[in-house]
Length: 383
Image (cartoon, rainbow, N blue to C red; front, side, top):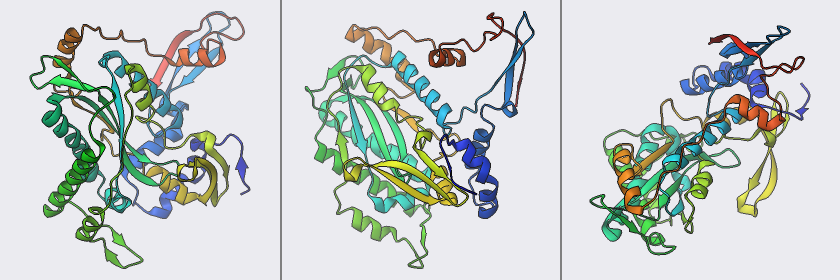
């Protein structure tokens, strides 16, 4: 097979190599990975069902196949991101926000990969506790927090880190008034790093003492990772946390972090060449001043790197805490809006398939090309 270049899609790659990949790995693939790849293979084909439209004049028939709605899909993931952003813009508080990034030492990445559910859940909790413990103790307020798990860098390696959108200030401890944070200040970076390191380390030790963690095996050393040794190393490191400057517009803040919510692992425009054995793609090397680099890896390795970022079924990669938690948001937000003398943003009408195609092509996809009249729905089916 010669190299294929040009318009390369993930659907094309999986249609060519997925069956061979499954056979090679012999039942070692997570169920959620198989689920999502199968959805991509059927995306926008009649296999997922379709809506059929007929022209009332010439009886011309047009089939609109259904999309897969998978976050892993490059096109459906983009639509899901836009929808999430609109939903949050409609009910988020019109106050200032900060963007934070919590990262992990590379020594913990393999343990996270081996213990996805337990590790990622305890990391979410550690992020939340690190922030809210400080705001309650020193600010005497409870902020609104959205935490987004992001597991990949531009080179597709497994690199779990968390993007956080947090209000600049928050509700008083009795939820009756709003307390504004000092101008352009959220909390001391050094103190937050210490809390983050402490909470993660403590949670790791507790989970290990309960025998909840599986230690990865290192084939080269022919031994299992020693958690005590890892903790000894990472406890001496400085854990990186980024605290962004204040974003005064809530809309800007939500759109900024919205890029990380359901973003596909790789944009198809970054795929350069595909052959039976190799796949070449480009990425930004941020360690080298955002230099654009082309990388070639084995086809099966590429698929493994890609699919390791698919979250387990029903695992929530975006979570709200503080006054944005599901438990109290609906009760508290209206009271705080009244106190701030602000109104909620009116919900926007979500774009349909028809809206998106019209915006892209300036043509209504449900108008007959011959008669220029609106087609009528006469049949539909679902997979």
